[in-house]
Length: 243
Picture 1 (cartoon, helix red, strand yellow):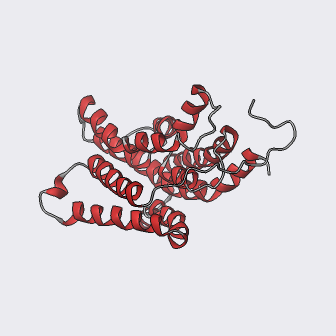
Picture 2 (cartoon, one colour; picture 1 turned 90 degrees about the horizontal axis):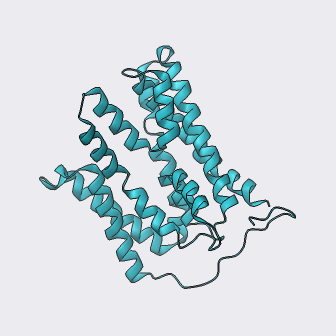
């Protein structure tokens, strides 16, 4: 199958989930900013938790520095994801293509990418991030412009869509792979400690995510090292080369 189309196929569930989640973001954002501004934020950021936090701080008239620092810390995990993903990318990929891919990396896109058995070519990754991007932006548009027509119960129900979608992505791989299951359990335990233990739970959300990610990934790398083997190529159709 064409690499771009294969990536798009993999991204369909993520796009549907993003539409629901960004719909609620659009409704929430429209309470303090214009629908157009909410749409621009989604089109240029593509970060669920970062956008929610940033807009909430805007509503509270927080300083530019506070908004920038908070969003930076919350989204810092994407830097770790991107660094990890570079080891799986096609070595011939240039900087411009990597920057495009980096813009589209989200938690769910990363989960699909890192568990793919294939080498991650530019066309595959472009297909993978395209529909989630469309789903996220279109959901924001519908939510922001149609906020007045929806009740609060519907909005609350959509708030858990992102978490349910991410669980649906990692559970199948956890059932097939012991290392993945161990890393997930470690990250879950660390997150629970941050949530329940006094004083520790006061740490900022961004730092919580980073600490849980680094510790669980480090333990996984130490006890379950990945064998150095060549990933299978994604079949390309004639005339569909990345060159």
